[in-house]
Length: 230
Image (cartoon, helix red, strand yellow):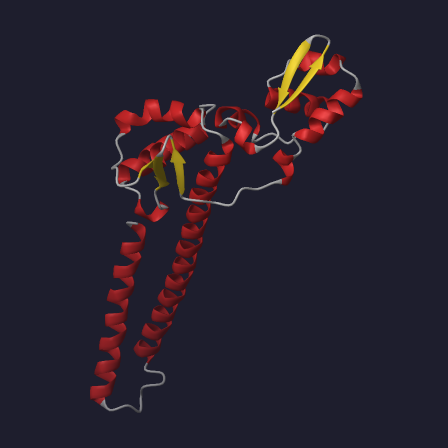
């Protein structure tokens, strides 16, 4: 922490993600300060300073503080699914391995009005390796993650979001392929009905052709039903 004193007011300015708690980060991570006043409010909230004190300070003081916390905008922490907290290894669950209970609670947090959604999401998704999800532990885990440094919390959040995005991309690609296969099946069935392209085939080959299209239809339906249950 960088310590600054102005008009008998002592200020501690974070110099890295390790010096910012997740509960503080949750207050500003969605903000995009544009005007000078918004920038002052942003920096004051990040550093836990009364905004009026900054407004009354020389421009040089504000510029110095803003320069110190500039890492918030210019640095990114690489995703990681494991972090050591109080000597215990905590791991984030893979998006495609979540239980129904976890998904329900995650959706409830995302759709809620809480100011600490990130802490609440980690309380659901991140726990000691090998531990099963227990919603009764959510309260104490939320407090633990609120007080966790961003240096440990942000890689965990980044990991889950990156895996969730990748899972959604794969699902979308699968659905596109399934839609194309379905269209191919419809075209093939229409082809068979009209007899186009198979009129010259022996009867046994035509029968087999029809059998294969019906088999394709069953397999397609099976995989489409499977995808919607994931």
